[in-house]
Image 1 (tube, rainbow, N blue to C red):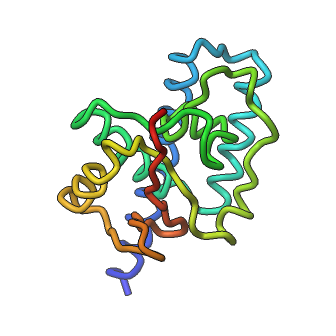
Image 2: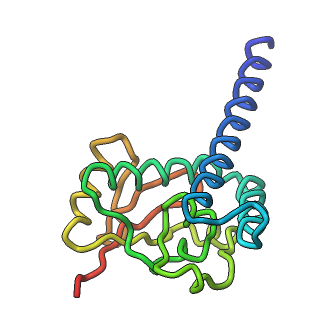
Amino acid sequence: MAKNKNQKRKDAISLKNAQETLRFQVQWGLKKLGVSEGEVIYKLSMVELEHITELGLTQDLLNMKKLIDGVEQQFGASVTPDKAPFAQSIVCIALGIARLNDMANLGLPMNWANAITQKMLPIYFSDSVRNDVVAWAKQNGFNTSTYLGKPIAKFSHIYLIIDRTLEA
């Protein structure tokens, strides 16, 4: 009984630490983008972050960030700007999971409840680096598979379809 209670306590502490880590990384990312605390975008990101936490997506977003950051370090490649549903999320933009060429293009906020229902969301890399990204993800312990011939990275609630964009 005491062992079960200790495990629940450890899980609660781990979840709280993950939430604090995500909040810090979002705030840091917003600061790097030049968004200050009083701005509307900052406030909207904090509301979106609360929603993400309520839906239990904290660890998924941290793992997605880990994947994207690893790819950037290894290959110097980032996700394709202005593509995928993540480009609608201020939190994902702050974390570097998505990119926008112009913050003025930020549209309606991402519907995270719908994202969980949809389950599979695309993320785009250039055609020249996409296969390397998939291979790197496999080598670094990300749970990967294929769906309809496209590689995916599996997280707890969301699966990322690692798709390609053709270079012009």
